[in-house]
Length: 173
Image 1 (cartoon, rainbow, N blue to C red):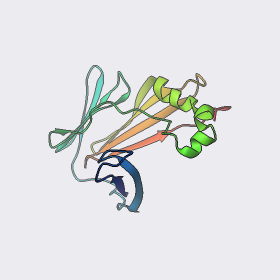
Image 2 (spheres, helix red, strand yellow; image 1 turned 30 degrees about the vertical axis):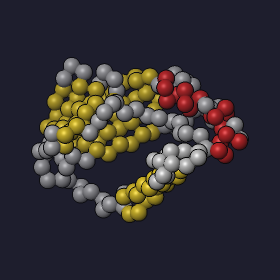
Image 3 (cartoon, rainbow, N blue to C red; image 1 turned 90 degrees about the vertical axis):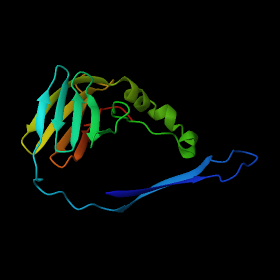
Image 4 (tube, helix red, strand yellow; image 1 turned 180 degrees about the vertical axis):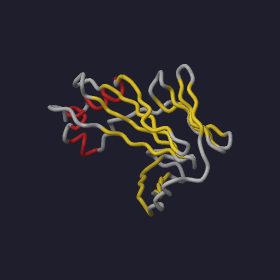
């Protein structure tokens, strides 16, 4: 999908904020991309290291850390696009309405879950000449059997599709 994000910044200093201060922002979906073809032209190759799994195409490389349970590097035409390892986050910044209804107090466990989740394993679920999928699992604080899975699928075009699944945890907000 195509998303437009707009930030409104002060042009000049005011009594309450300096120029450049963000006073508003928003984003909206403005269109959807066509569904990808079932098979892309070209092929990929995969490689294993001691703590890594790599997917390589004509002009891209994607490296996963099987030690830390995360995407580690994404390069297109030799340019690196990651600055740090991504991980699931279950919390968002509070709004004024949230402050008024004590959302941070009631649901603060999700902020904690984002910071304390534990990587518990990975599995390669697909590995063909055109596509590879690796699934990472994370354990949350609420139940030893409760896990979040994040699947990364890389195809021969260099597209990375991410799917996160959280089945829920009884008794949690």
